[in-house]
Image (tube, rainbow over all chains, first blue to last red; front, side):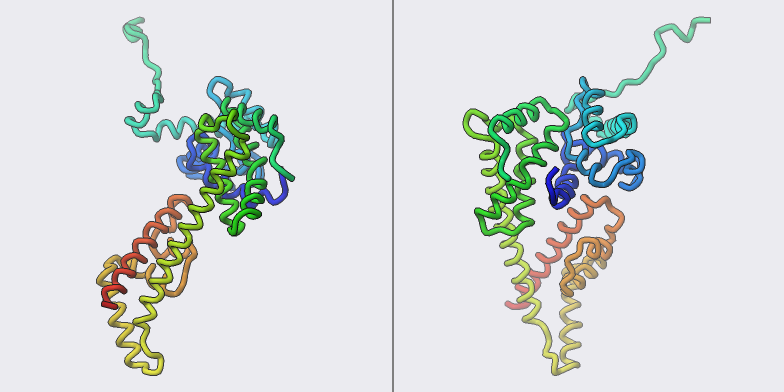
Amino acid sequence: MKKNSHKWLENAARRATEENWALGSLLQAYLKFERKSEPDVLQELECTIEVYRKIAICRRPRPLRFSEDVDRISERFGLNPNRLTAVIRRAEVLATLATPRDEMAATGATLLAARDRRGQEDEP
Amino acid sequence: MSFPPPAEQLSLHRRVLDEDPLSSFDVFDYFVPELRRFLLKNSAIDDDIAYDSAIDAIFTYIRKPQVFDPKRARLSTFLVEIARKRAIDRLRSRAARLTREKKFEVDVDMFRPDANNEMESEIDAISLWRRVQQVLPDVHDQECAKELMKGERDTERLAAVLGLGRMPPTEKRRAVKRRRDRILKTLERMGSKLRQ
């Protein structure tokens, strides 16, 4: 990381909250739906504001390589991968639940719910 | 310091295409300081515009990395081109805003009462304020107009008088800008009518 990074990092991280590809938008969803402040999340992730901004401009972990991606992000910025996973997973669920149905259909997102097997309730 | 070597740029581009989660951070980290330096050296812009334009260029690239063709140019060349265009857009936008604000100040100055005649000043001010109340019926807008006339530019202060203080920061900034622009436009129109 170069010197004076704080000059652009804050700006880039703020703008990343509006970019769907960025982890920043997921963190923003987490703040919004959990009604938490940035200091709350810094405490949860056990990181500094600078690290928080750095992960905000990373891409979201790829669904098929989720663990590997979270591990790499955590390793690079010295984060606890379990804590990062918990925040990302929760943010994903909250963001999906908050997405209007039409938008979900357009993006191909799906919500699944568990259901009893047919006839299961009749069994003794 | 300079842009990364071509092979490193190509490798970074492949990681971006592969949606490697760290690739976007690395693009920012490698290129923002260099793009800024390049823009400052080659154009008459300030530090803020240079940084913002560099960041614009990278967001544009990350959103659609497939638009960049590595056979035609280096990634740094591609990003410099975008950053330069964004810097020009920002300069034009700033110039237009300054012209708008200057025009508003001139309109208000024209109706500023003579300070030597206190009573006349007061009557003129009351009359002018009534006109403002007519064109801006919303009380929050009126308070915001007062702040703008005082030269207030702080987003937090304007958000507070507009009753937008509790919004999330990004939405707040946008909402304040929208309302501020609308109020200035309305006052500008009012000034033009009075002048006629």
